[in-house]
Amino acid sequence: MTQRMTLIRSPLFTSAARLDKITDLRELFDPSQPLCLEIGCGIGDFVVQLAARHPDKNFMAIDIFNQGCLKTCTRLENAGLSNVRVVRTEARSLLLKHLPPQSLSALYINCPDPWPKKRHRKRRLVDPEFLQLVRYFLHEGGDFHFCTDFVDYGLDVAAALNAAAGFENCLSTPYTHELGTYPISKYMRRFLDKGQPIYYCHYRRQPGFVAAPPPPHKGFRLPWGAEPR
Image 1: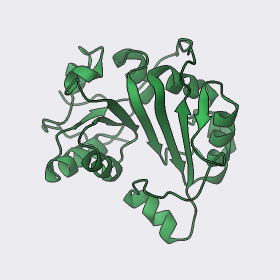
Image 2 (image 1 turned 180 degrees about the horizontal axis):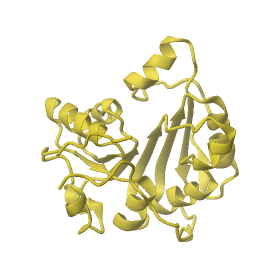
Image 3 (image 1 turned 180 degrees about the vertical axis):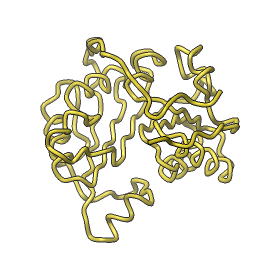
Image 4 (image 1 turned 45 degrees about the vertical axis):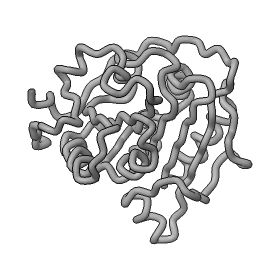
């Protein structure tokens, strides 16, 4: 199966060639503003809302799909937002190669691939090992937000966060279905309109907790070929 690859010319897009030369993503932004990361930006619904609400913060939006990155850039440009950069990359690779420890103010993951078949669940992004990365790259008091429409994924992540050292729960329960003022993407709205709940977790890195460096990872691969350069 071949995915059509489109050259993205938006000034908000950071190409693979440029990313290769960067060890600290904060150099792409106004350094006086905190950096937040959305993993799996889809077509940009969520990050457009978030960046518009918080012009005093910088946002990095990543996805592994070329067309999603293209649509996200278009939405951001149409909204007149300049505090976001978009990258086509894999999340763990970005964190380990292009960010110093304790460099993120917040990290958002909304409705990631649930890998619903039991034999495939080891492929899910958010697990106890990934939470070590989250804890290492969030600065003290930094926020981790996770949403899923998939029941056992929500329960598993809530349990893993509750058991993980160095995190404190910002909610009164391990997860909630009440999203409050949290931005809702079109994808999330589709499930809510059907009466299907979203599982939402909000945890914060504990001040004073010393996070050990994450273990080395075997490697990363983007699907469907290289990005046009």
